[in-house]
Image (cartoon, rainbow, N blue to C red; front, side, top):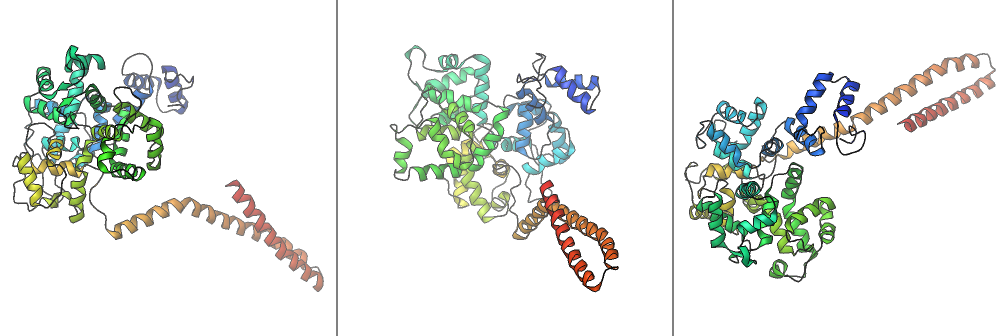
Length: 488
């Protein structure tokens, strides 16, 4: 983007865009102009960095569920539940198991048209341990829920964005009104129902937002949760980064405050840290200060510029809710090669709908330890319908971490490492081979002339010439080697 931005105004104009294409010969003037108009989403005559990134992500190949979410965000989807609404409106039963061809036809409805992308998404959603398995649209939604924020809060954030134009207006509409302070959960649920949420979804939203189980909801809790749930393309990679490092984030804070007990660590309101202090701790996990400050700003809805550890981790869990089922995934993979194998012989049909109590009993039957089964159930119930199926649980847990979930064997790891080393050293190997060949050719070219001169000399001179020849060979080889490596 900086290369194309010739006048350094953080925007690319049609002249700059056309100059790049005409200079490189990649497109005609007409093609360059058409591509520019496609990138200029708001039709203001220029392409911003956000529009440029959206275009790149829009054409990037989808290899997994996280790639699908990026595609949706780049195409302007404001919530993941739009996928379900669009596919369901086309006449597809979301609970019906679909073959690859049927599944691909459903994906075409949401602008995913390449067969190889259909295959990649289908493989990440279905039971990979069964070659004949199929997948439903509900399974796809469960998988999408594993790589984004809370779908319910994402939906709520979009409803609030459409109805109110600012954070203050949102709190005025959903808060306690003129009384100020906090709002009770019962009153908040009634306001959510007026906003269009079903009763069961309103109750679930209250449970998610009331993290401290205080029975009331503050302005900070509501607004920070809504801000963390809004889809933003430039934060998707950061979301995955936080997801992958969540356990390490917990560990490094406990190490930094090892003198404090768990209860003190979570509830000490006197110990508030600034953004710089959080950034200093998280630098060890390869988080830039810019990334930490963005997450800090989203969690600090009141603008106090200082957060307790409890408030910070509340923001992290709202930003990456999949961390609540990470322990379930790790326990499953510790016993089986695939997540699906954990539920293979559980004795319950994968299509049967399970409520919170039945889900907790299933975990107990499988000897899977879970600190709060009800919170895990709320996360797995991405459509907020009050029930889940084992098929949806498998689809979610398979995609909690982006990419394949199958553990590689030791032989596969060694082969991959050997291949990577060869690829990494290939340019150096070619350079050394060329160097040896050049040195050998140059030495052989100089040798005949030296031998001819030595033939007319006396035996003593011949001996001296031979010594000079050996010296010349060594000196020439050293000179060529030195010159070549300086050039490299």
